[in-house]
Length: 210
Image (cartoon, rainbow, N blue to C red; front, side, top):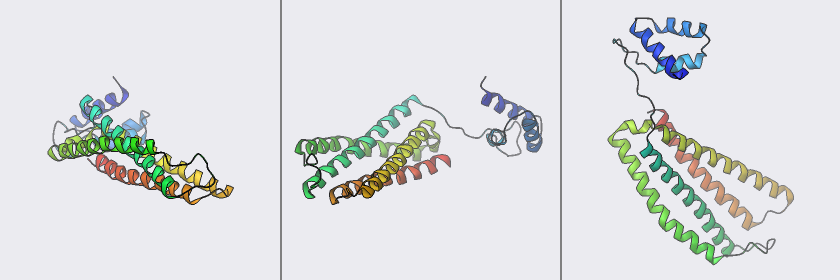
């Protein structure tokens, strides 16, 4: 039995025997459990005056949802990647960069990005609507552990992209190599990362409060 399951079973049995939450908390802390572990174990049970104690809803893992959220995550990544690539090519077309001979408009890359967006944007919108519909139909889906994991991975990557983007911008500015072409690309990456970060921040707030 995992320690977390052992702890949950102990708390449930103690509550069934009429022990107060303060007494249970002191007993667990005396046994070496941390304050956070004790708090989470007690929070897993409703405070309603009912015997036996009523468990609160917990996060769950579903293979079906792992597939859906995985595809959702990949679709979002492809949209962000190819939106940036498309933006880069348009910037190269509209704003010449005299400091980089290789930084020129690539029509083949433009076509590839457009084709990818035609495929992944509808797929992302479909999956997003499906996820929202399931959550509205059954709020239990908001407690999906898979949803939280993919959401926090996306937040991590978005925050990392913003940090790297800022480092590159500062380094380029200090080196005196900043051009209008480069600045436009830096701003595009920052906007895309910020949009994803804001979207998933709200998603995670909703998941944590479910």
